[in-house]
Amino acid sequence: MIDGIITVILVAICALLNILFVKSLFPKGRFSSFDIVLVLFLIIENTIAALLLSNYVIVKALLNLISIIIVTKIVFDISFKRSIIVNLLFFGTFTAMEFVALIIFEYVSDVNSYDNLTNSNGAAVLEIICYLIMLIIITILSAKRKKSFLSRLDMSGWLAFVMYPIVTFTLVALLLYLPTDKISQSVFCILIIFAVSMLFLSIMQFFLIDNIIQRETEIQNKQALIDQAEHIHKMYQSLSEEREMQKSKAHDYLNHLNVMLSLAERDNKKEEIDYIKEQIGNATNSVDIIDTGNVVINAVLNIKYREARKKNIIMPLIADDLSCISISECDIVTILSNILDNAIEAAEQCNNKKIVLKITKQDNKLFIDSSNTYNGNLFPLEKRFTTKSDADNHGYGIANIRQTVSRNNGECIIDAKQGIFRISITIPML
Image 1 (cartoon, rainbow, N blue to C red):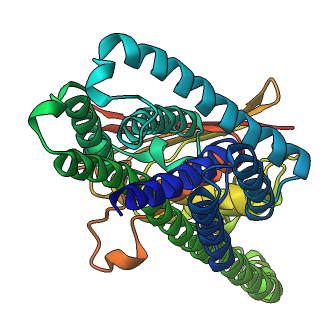
Image 2: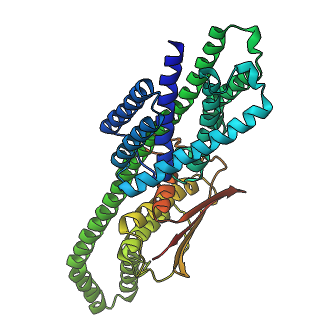
């Protein structure tokens, strides 16, 4: 009975590790309900084969290999060729580890104390060791992948993640050096079951954290789209208002000319000069003073420039000719709008209100460099946080910038010191 329980758990662990190994090489989002059903089918099929075909090792191995190839092909949407190669790589790696572990096991442990390493207890301990090593390999492969959830864990997250593997390793070490002649067979089997269960929980924790972070990423993506749509809506709304204002001014242009003509006919030079200066001033306040050669960038920069000027913020801008850039209009709106919204909000709270923005091109790369004064209170750069009352609708600025830059294979560097907040972005232009 106990041997059967151990076999079932080990088979489930092997199947789950196989799925994780393929996932580390072929990244996939959250598993659908159909994917979960296929994985459960794989575990059940492998369990039945392990229980009924224990005396037919080759037949069992071939049956399991065929089933895992079909399941991974469907779940990860890869070709049969790739599925065969990656699964053979998994089984080959595991077999090699098992062989090496067996040799090491014979030297570091008293083989006679287990009667034979091929019996159920010795084989279980050996498999636990190999599965632990395999889990470490998968963890390293996943951590090296930029978009893996492991690359997003902080120190506390890593401590929680490695808790189960550490406990499992401790139990295995205990099993290796435990004098089996002084404890009963049932107690030893219970310890094995406990170790195997901890290893199973480690793997399930891997899936759980991955699923949680995938959900969080989806929420951030949806919020980023909402934020992007909001910025675009504001931009076009401002453009529409500007257009209506220009139409109104064009309508009044003739009236202004008649007034100036009347003043000139009466020889009221002073009043005429004052009136002309007033009209020039009004025109200067509404005209677009920034021209980068890109209509969308012009719209964003001019809107934000006028907003900054209304709040008495000094905002010098340096920009190259941006008429030909490969980044999409939506993405450039998201980046520039979030940068300038954050900068205006921070600079407004300072005595020295200043924002400096540079947008340049060089060596097929787009460089965006923004620096602004701030009052010394900064939000955590890696977390969603805001001091605004409607926190559910704010605080995504930095996250949206990072995400958009990353989507364009760019790099975003943020630095804050001595009252200056700076964000530097580099995006390759294909």
